Image 1 (cartoon, rainbow, N blue to C red):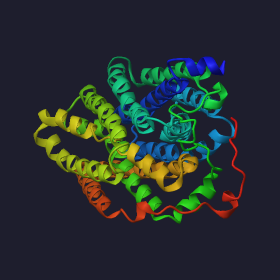
Image 2: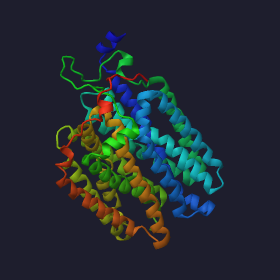
Image 3: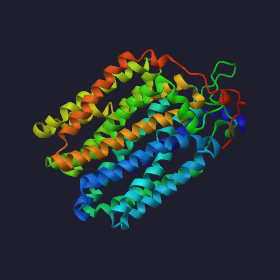
Image 4: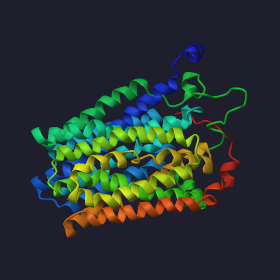
Length: 435
């Protein structure tokens, strides 16, 4: 069996990557759904933007905080088993939102349950799959998997906006729950934990000692990994910049662009189309970023991405108020940069902390991303509730992004320091944990 797989033209790593892309695509659609539901929930239940944003903030925070523990559990219990459990939780939680009546139910279902389920299938899943299954083209694969977040918006948001327009918000929840159930079948049938299960080496592995082992040493557990990472200046650079990334994407634009457009008389279907347009161009931008991260120093890429994102956000209030015909150009420009930050950030994490620990430590960096998203989600909702619009939120976020980009010009020193593993871990025997 192993010999036949080695001789096959298509390495099984590409099948695993394809299934992972599908998982990330659907969970991205699930995470994007509250942006479509905010206005109808306000209308039906009388809940304020601040109140709904608080539930979304819990969702975003859990999405990030569960990532490091998910990476560790993938080593102990198996990637396939954990993803299947997450998809079951998502399908059940989203389906139950159709019968919710109270705000605490919104917090429990969309905040706690959906946040926990998507946390398992967060971008740490992409990092684990890319590092575990690929030696060659890791940056390109990671860029493609990251682009699944944009593609999820591309496929789901226009459809969900039209469903909302014709059949109400409950139809949106049912379609999203059904999508999670369908993906469950694909994961059950095709996902595998490690190349060794198929008697394979990672794609591109050079047998004659020319490659770096994915499991070349023991991996850190989540809390131990956080303690180790916090001693490194590189962690604070990467976590701090990713905090800004999450605030300016998932937290601000992903959650609040549709209601911001609604404030200026732009229909929800058109606003969802803008997010979908961002998704189209982010596929190209993030995949290209993965390709570039194999060739260009990552900190120069991050300098460019944050600088351009800041300029885009600073221009958005004027575009909404006076140049709505130019919103498509904003969507294109912003979309190219949406999550292009992920491939160079993952590469720097692997370089600074080793591939064996990239999943766990990138999980904590991803948690900072989602804490930033949560802060921006609730903060922008508060600004809209009390100021009447999102103008100040866009200006604040744009300024912080601009400054973050400039800061990467001065990070060569912190990003070049690699701390040795804790003694208790470095003395432990290296072994591959079977799922």
